Length: 218
Image (cartoon, rainbow, N blue to C red; front, top):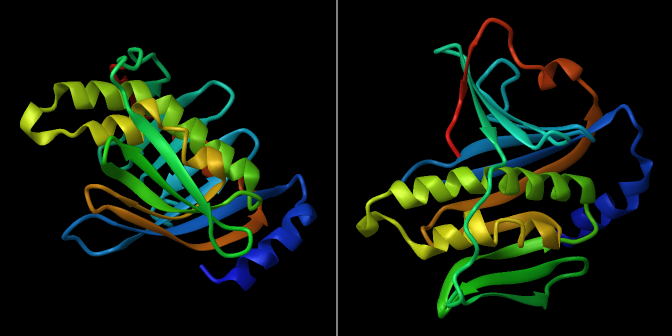
């Protein structure tokens, strides 16, 4: 992330119109796999995450209802995830957030669990603040589901950092600002490629008709 690019975002932050949507384009990579694009579109009411294709699979967060919909085109199924609830943190929980100033307008962070770095990267506290809030809302809405997945995973295949990144500290990092880059303990990474304002396209935030709707356990 180049400092001059971030400065341009901050200068343009007040020029958005009500009919705009924020478009974030990240490059994600899972360990051992090729990198792939992720597009995130944000409005006051919705967040949509997809691979960049308007007619592909997508995840939709209804920000007001705090419900998440996962749309799978080929099988014509929409999975619905409610916010649910998660157990309280155990008294021995030792997660902490370390922060330090980076380049102008950038904060670097490390989310620690004991001596283990669960995730680290950088954020822009003043860039696309509503998009950062929406990312926090998405993680929070999915926290109960993520806890269930962790609980049902064989002990030898799970890690407490999953609880830190996805459950009990889910909103901590995006709560700092817009994520610019992130690397998790597992090796998964994400780097912001572009942040822009684009004309609103309401059709991208509508669920397809005629699909089977399945409520996911949480």
